[in-house]
Length: 88
Image (tube, rainbow, N blue to C red; front, top):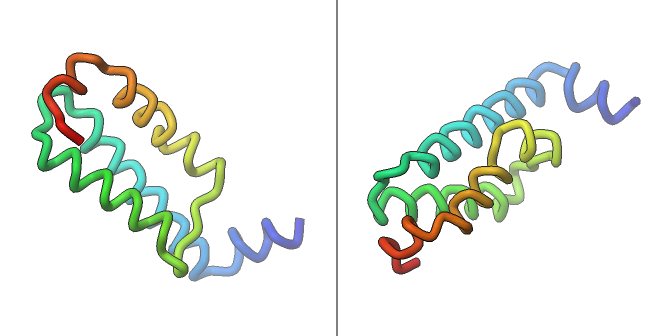
């Protein structure tokens, strides 16, 4: 409970988490566009990778699930029509 209080109730961290969640949602929206160009998809994937690689940000499992990142990546990876169009 101390971790939750520290992370979510101490002001700036709460704002950072909100921006991380909002950033994740924007990336999900970009990846979910059925007619998205390969360039747009690659840019969204690179942004997602950069978010995970950054030592200054953390993404909780709750944020991953609730933002739709997991479902979006699963849909992307299993969409045979989209995979034929992209050469990732």
